[in-house]
Amino acid sequence: MKKLIGILFLCISFVSNAQFAWPDGKKAAVVFTYDDGLNGHLDIAVPQLDEYGFKGTFYCTGNSQSLNKRTNEWSTIAKNGHELGNHTLFHPCLGENRDWVKPEYDLNNYTLEQIVAEIETANTLLKAIDGKTERSFAYTCGDYKAGSDDFTKNIEEIFVGARLDGPIPETIDDFDVIKACSWGVDEPTSEDLIAYVNEAREKGTIAVFMFHSVGGGYLNVGEEQHRALLKYVNENSNDFYNDTFLNVIKYIKANR
Image (tube, helix red, strand yellow):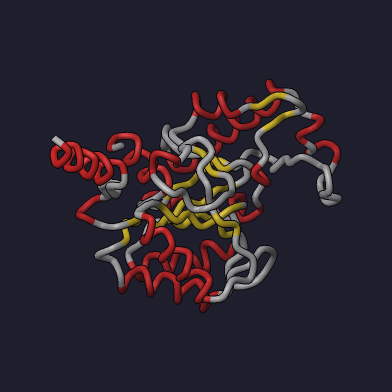
């Protein structure tokens, strides 16, 4: 009897610690996301992603100058399998300790109805560019309250998934698809970027990168550092599953 109980305990322990079943026996997911709809995304990030056969998610604000002036190029990358994600119209954030946030774009001054209307209008704009009705969302500055109202339930009703910041999850069961954790990089080394995907591989979970500027600018990742990361993931493609944030979230929902 004791032997049987021991075997059952080992089986239960194995099941509870079993790695999530990523496609083709891969060990972890790696997701490349890019915020604010910047020229560097079209000029540097997309060509590098395409070179290695990877897909990225580009969270464009509606008032992005690049989105305005290079609309056809954004439409083309969507046709080629990259995702155009929703990042609101005007990038409102909570103004505390952020002197760059204008009063009219301070989420403290928004109503719940106002932020939801802005997000839905941004969806209409993106649909006009890529023709898609299904997409994901990135919280601006990682904030999810308008005044005192939490709008994550509204996000859950509108989007397949949504991204903010936070550590790599210990298990996929811990991964909240409406508050998905990611790393907002700022001048990382190649070693930093590679260590991040290796941590996800060790845990069998997911590494989501939150990039902003690529190749120069604010919250930047250098062009060569970005390429080194892609090269490493490509060289270890037997272990890493890559797709858009939208598609990875759909896979997690369907398989956990």
